[in-house]
Length: 381
Figure: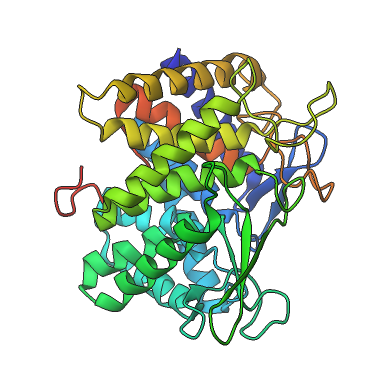
């Protein structure tokens, strides 16, 4: 099943290289076509990551050449200085230039990725002890705000520490991950999407949401970011506490998905025939749960529980949510939601859903784990 699904994805991606013409997909808007941009969205790295996965899997130069062109584009984006008002620099450069470094050991790609890490470091706020998610320093609403998504940006800093041995990268990532663990994860193993702190002192104020059903609900994509993010941080930091946190979040996610094993957009949203799904949340969670399961001892009884959950979820995504068999659709995965709360592409393709879906398939089929960590560093794989 996985191999056939990958072959479908390869075919769609091959067609999309021509369709997109050097531009970057973001989300669709109620039809079969992606809305394209000139590498201006926080999501542009996912297209680059898809191309690197396809290149690594097939060794076909068509995918490799397209992937390299995206890295060149990201070099231009860095020169334009258009990435400073949010923290998603890790999403952008881990799956583009860092991917090229991991696959090809290209020194220019390494240098670009280190430059991106330095840009992310500029969002560190020493007074409050956090990486500011959105806006400029001192922003009234966002100056002391973290969001759970940032856990997937931290591997950029932790990779930079491995490359340079500059302890400051590791210190900042570790402190932010620990703050996220303490305040974003609730006692019942659900999660807040965001949390607010006093900008001057770092004192906790309150949990909240930006895209979830309400401040106290559990936005499913946020829970998925937490699963994968804490698992990745635990790998880099060799932290048993963060690994256990990832397991806790994974258990909660698995326990709350509906019968077809694909999540609704928020675990606390009223579930009716009209409630939107978020296939991207299940794809992200699958990658995170595989990261957990692969590092558990074979004798650990929970290992098979996690693997079974991924098998069930991915089988449902392939059979019921993928675009297999279509020659016109540009996405890999249907029924992703960008922002149900905001009415922004609530039931569409989302390029991060496509990326994580393909990463999960390639982990299952051939053990290709994506580009969040360097596979040859410090024996971590």
